[in-house]
Image (cartoon, rainbow, N blue to C red; front, side, top):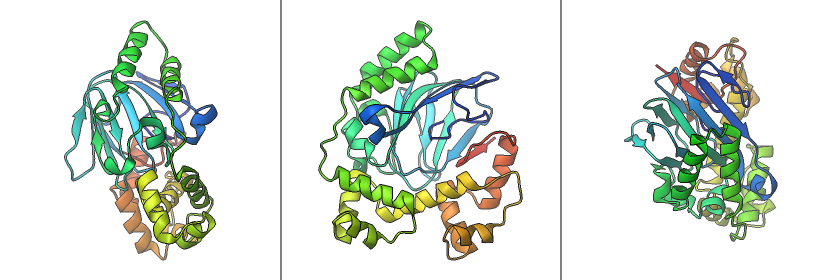
Length: 297
C-alpha cells in the first residue's frame, strides 16, 4: 500500500480502479520534492490477507480513514493502527494487514524527509510502527479534515492534494547537515557499490562523521541505505514471470556470490528469492508490477 509501487493484488498504474479497489499516486511539487517520494491514497477490499513490504530506506506515514490496519515487523509485535501510522526507517520488511476494507491516505518520504516534514527524529522511530498522531500532533486535524472531505465525496486525488498542502505549509529545510546527507544519498543512488569512505570524502566529512550525520537525518547508516537501494534495484529489474538466474543477477549487481545475495534478499523481504517469485506469480498477473511486495493469503 505504501511505496513507490504500492498496492495489493491490483495494478500499480496511477489512478486505476480494479474491482472494488481504487488507488491513486501523485508526485510532490516544489520544495516538497526534496522530502517526499510519493503521495498515495487507497480505498477498497484487498484480496490478500496481508503482505510483506521490503524497505525503501524511507519513512512512511498514513492517515487511516477506514478500519484499523495492522503494522509491524515479522517476529515483532504488529499492532492495529486505528487513526494512522508512522513507519520509521527500517531494514526488515513491514507487515501490512488490513482488518477490513482499506481506506487510507499517506506519503512516503525521501531518506532525508522525516524530520523536515514531521519534526520527528528518524532515529527515534527507527524500526518501529507507531500511531502517527502520537509523534506528529497535526495528524489529528489532518485526519478530521480528510474525513470531512471524504464524507462530501472528494475523490482520492483531492485527498492526496490536501495532505500535500498541509505538509507544504510546515516543511523545515533548515536542518543542519541536510544538504550533505542529500548529496550522500544521491551518490549511493547513482552507484550503491560506492565505498562509504568515498561517499564521505565527496561530501566533505570523515567516515565516522558521515555515519553519525546519517543516523541523525536518515535514521540508517550509509551502508544500510546502499544495501536497500541495491535490493530495490534488483526487485525492480527482475521479471518474476520468467526464469531468474540468480547467480547471474548476483554478479551483475555486485554481490560476492549467490549465497550473499540470498542472505541480503531474505533479510530485506522476509522470504527467499524462490518464495518471493512464487508469491509474486500467485498474486500478480504478468501485466502488473509490484516490486518488493509479498502477498500472503
